[in-house]
Image 1 (cartoon, one colour):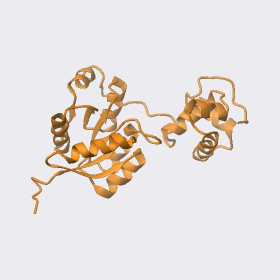
Image 2 (image 1 turned 90 degrees about the vertical axis):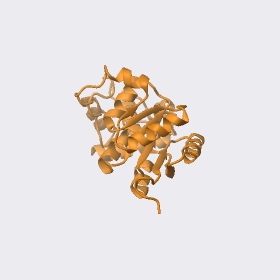
Image 3 (image 1 turned 30 degrees about the horizontal axis):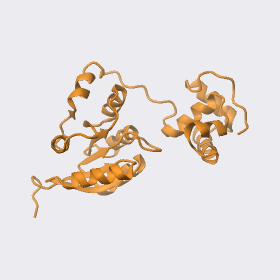
Image 4 (image 1 turned 60 degrees about the horizontal axis):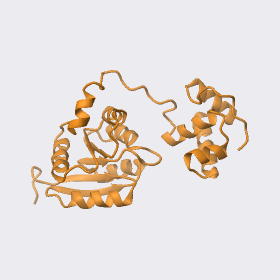
Length: 227
């Protein structure tokens, strides 16, 4: 029987690209002392799978549909505070790093990191340490401060729903919102129905007024009630 001291690090991989996810799973599964216990393609799936499989570490991508990796990390820190999040992403901009760390991630690596670096980082975050790539760490010294990042308006909305609401508040029709976000017009209409329900408003005009009060929409003319 494997003792607690030598048992493998249980890992959940969250990435919306199947090829990347399979490649990461194959890479981590080949490392000594690492066991891939689950995979997820969205932030919501990552939360669900983490609660089911109880991994030691979630390897989290940033850009995922519906709920991104930063929001998933924030919620995971509340639901399962003992589970470490290691953000592995292609994005190296300061804002992404800061958002991920403030959300509760214990580590940050760029995709393409060497195998040994990934393994060392996994072991470190699983042991409760805070680890970052040297470039990101150097930049963060001048960026992180005790001032909390302002919460986004309408926290009950997903990131995509806020995008839709922001564009509608700018006066865009459903068809234009669909074009800008590469969505079907019916999908935009469905998002709006959910938004109206969550914000407890009776329709488009009330939603626009509420959105502008919270800083969305850029102060353009009221949107019409058409599509």
